[in-house]
Image (cartoon, rainbow, N blue to C red; front, top):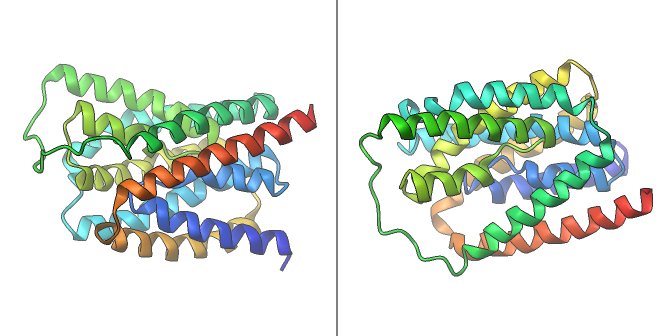
Amino acid sequence: MDSTVLIAIAAVFIVSIIFSMFGQGGGSVYTPILFLLGYAALTSISTSLVLNLITALSASIVYYRSNLVDVKFALWFVPGICLGAFLGGVAAAYINPAILMWLFVIFLLCAGGRMIYTYWEKSSSEDTCPAHYSKGMYALIVIFSFFVGIVSGLLGVGGGLIIVPFLIFLCRYPTKNSAGVVSFVVIFSSLFGVFGHLTSGGFDFPLILGCAVAVFIGATIGARSMVKIPSGYIKAGFGVVLWIFAIQLILKLIHIM
């Protein structure tokens, strides 16, 4: 097996463990890892979506068994995120790959800052899920999920880094339950993003197969380890990692230009 593929498999294994602890697919790191290893932008994005799907699916099983997935509530995110992810996946083939990667740089910088901020952020004392929301909040969820879906399909991310703050601060959801809901929602954003990318190809099946096995194992380990590790330190540390990837992408994009 090619050494580049082996490096990719090892990298996504580690990433899947860490990101699945927070109900996220890891696409914010899968895509830049593959791109920096020399894979084409569309191949990196489409592969990332498949890996997101596997990570979220395996993590959701663990969360569901732990009663941390409110399926009825999570389904409100599904219609908008499915439509948005599919449209984003289709549109990705018509956008200059360099532009896609510059958009990803912006996403990494914002997401990294958001994760680093959690180190100083006060934890919510709320430990129960709200019983219901207003009609306006449900409408906001649908609209919000549509735009998250577009970002997901375009950049190959599950959208968890965007959805988690929305759940915690606007929906007043406890952190652990948010991870369960997000892992469920990311299944749909990743799946329909893949459907969108299927219209243009760009899939490297040997790469996907090798990484898929590593991601499934890593995501299961990460989801089971969630309650054992202080999340604040991990999130802040990974925020720094996202910034490092952003810098590396910038240097590579400048070199390409």
